[in-house]
Image (tube, rainbow, N blue to C red):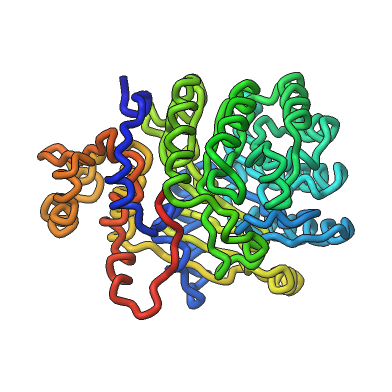
Length: 467
């Protein structure tokens, strides 16, 4: 039995001792390192290398509009009931996609597609068709069997008919934000979807032959308790989603204004949050879900589990993902692309994004070119966070270094974790033990060169807690 199928080993004192603030490593280096001085010529050269390598593509579209404000949300969103705002934005996204289509080889295949937000179903059926048809015109898509084409939805604000239209357009995967079914919790965060809505929608998605249904839950929300989470979990398990994400609510009102609408006194304390997490992981594992890592769970026959087993799992801006061989091209406000050794992030506010598009320019605000050391450390962190192990031989072969010599200081920093029973290190590499799985971000932080340098900064970057 692999470590990912084993029941989690829980040591609360150890967790509390190592539960520091740190990055989620959806990229390395992380977004705070991106630079405004980034040269677009670096992006163009990266696209040339991507073409020469014949790597397939993953496309991401950021649709920022929401009809109502969820108080906990830290996403880049625009809350509005004005539906007329979406069409001009979609037209500019198509324009941006067209600029990139001229740079990539025509035969480069799109194996993944993801519409995120915001609430992507804010836009009309006609606008969905416009965006999807333009994407297919500009790029070559994999077929329905091999491609993963996903959309995020708010189950309280979408109809079965809309989902049928999206299925006809080629979407075959759905991620819905359930968060919590408790009415008091929903009122405290201004996010409403009943069990009946979610259940009816899930039945409809199965009938429409969506290949995968994923549900997102959050623990640590205001007025939430272990009892309310237990009731939500049981209802969700009864609906049998293919994948589940269990996110930690990070209360950071200094960064996200909407979180100021949540009362501090309504939030569960640290020990209660840990109890919720412990209960949720055990419950999901007992229900047959494989604990992929961090906040992701999936059924044993799911593509995520298969990708992890076959060494094809990756960590990107959508979390754990299959198709680790793809370059990521992201369009829309605030979206981040990852092409070869380059990250680029678009303008974060809508006006700046649209102004650049109206000038015929790529709407890039920041970027980062990874050097050889960055690529090495990205490889190390990705291996650890996806597979809980690292092979020294694999690093030596891929980067032509002696990893034990190169990471001498880092391996020394990991010694206390060996003593605590979190990891083992021998001549073959590093292996994270069951007790250390929950603290994988803490292990990865040791290899984060920028984080190590930032410890002496007067104004350190603020991250959420690991757990």
